[in-house]
Amino acid sequence: MTAELSPSAQRVQDTLAALGFGGRVVELPASTRTAQEAAQAVGCSVGQIAKSIIFRAQDTGRPILVVASGAHRVDEQKIHALVHEPVLKADPRFVLERTGFAIGGVPPVGHARQLETVLDEALLQYEEIWAAAGTPRAVFRLTPDELCRMTGGQVAAVA
Image (tube, rainbow, N blue to C red; front, top):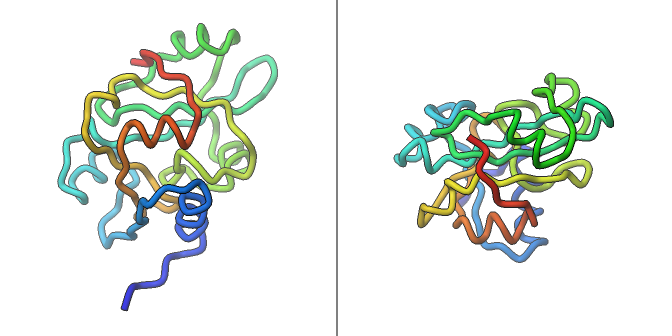
């Protein structure tokens, strides 16, 4: 018998299935809110954590999703150059309104709206990576190729 997923984690599971990906969302007893916590919880390196960070484009207000290696700090100037306008890290309310998920559990897919997405090229070096799945305790395992295909994101140097 499998444990029932929380509504947010189930939404991510349903999105993965709808997109044709076999990834299984798991909710863990330990927090996966930060890249370090997630790496400890699943037993991988911090670099293998695909952390989702939402930025707000300064001029247009559009949301920008950056999926970065947990080992990296995103350089906002590099994102600015990629999206052709300055960006600011989004506040929790903006993140929830634009994605449908709270900070600490934002997945790379399943958002309330379509998001412009940038993927950290550093994630491509790993055989497998782990991403948030809707809550601060839910994750799913995937490959970098799957991440690219499911998000349609632009791969770039973001650190």
